[in-house]
Length: 408
Length: 141
Image (cartoon, rainbow over all chains, first blue to last red; front, side, top):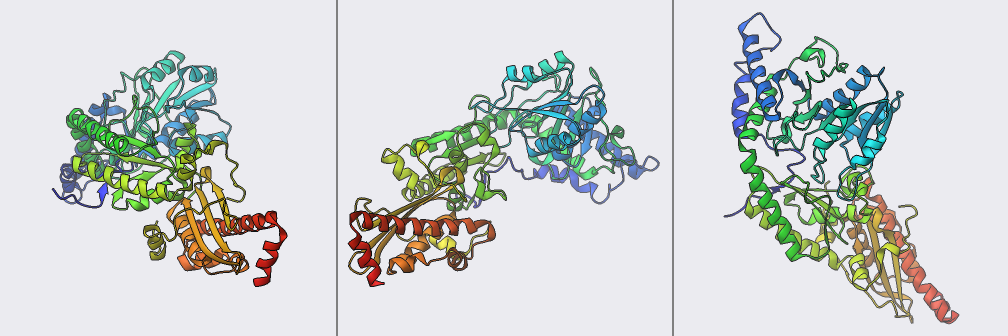
């Protein structure tokens, strides 16, 4: 079977809308266009009904009650609302927050913002496997701690944090627990009660729904979480997030959640096999590969590999018919390599040599084989022109070399 | 990021990849950059001691496509130049030739540094071997 190029293998960045999601959305652009807040005519009722259906579909996916779902524009807004909203609401109780260095920027930069306004934030380090230490977390907790925010699964390395254990610690201490669950929800089982999560950020476009809509799960019972709204206006979404609801988006989000719930078990297993196939093929065909992050506690569809002695952007250039991401500096606006990979302590050189593969609903075995073979040839070619590879083969210890770094 | 056609050409068909013997007194080696910065260039020149002209140039680069292209282009330009002409190569000429965007200018700077490091290594080797070699080189310019 001929494969269609380019190949998309960047499902952590975004996912295409499932055609069944698009189909569900279509009527809400045209005939069912009402404002869900219009309470006095059928157009509004129809829209409200569609929103409530979507809310239930999403709640069902994460074991929540529909009333606990607050719609937002996406997970960045959800993270902002959870962290700033809780910090502001519980200011009298304390001013200390705990998060971790490998969080998404939507969490880290929100925390940095709070630090400028009198809050204190502990950024927990991660171990080499990408997970936080529960002992370090317990040690960081003080009587001023009001919120712990730790992501469920990392967007670069797919590493799953010990969310259930953190939830138990937070609950025992009476501290709120927020998790950025964007990469995990819809992919592997995630239940807010089993995990003792008080708030969870989720996004439609990471789970085969449309862009521009997300949600924050906000616990209503035991404890009832209150948040200071960050966007003021008509008092939508229980006063926590004003603004006319994105009805089409919510309909699509709901449908996407329903499909994920139905297909997660089969899809997760299929992707795990594909991911392992990719990993096995690469390891058979190339030496000096390093998997970044835990292989045990990891999303089934993620692989993050450093190809030693080869720089990530040049690697991407050689596989320009494959869409993946690199932790290399050159692929981003900043000149710093991935802060997530740096936090693992593997060394900046390996961060520069990394590729993130994200498999998804439409990934195939043929695509995996194509990508593995293509990477093998490109890595081999680039290593032949890599001074580092040559030096390593000559027995030079690169870690003790004196590099000329000034000015670069 | 979009690359210029010249960068792509050098990336796909790099000129003069390889290594020259570091032990050769007529070979100068420059190794610049650092792995943690994402760029390391090794650039070597082989100078004809009789004429002071660079007969051969080789490179190996760990870095992005623009870094590979900058060093590949540098080796092309070095061949046939005298040592002092080589030292006059400016990074801006590399930027112009490859149409490098602002975020990639550091690649051209690194290539210029690599040229200078290689030539200086050659000169140092020559002066260590006795002043005569360097004098001879200067005289031919």
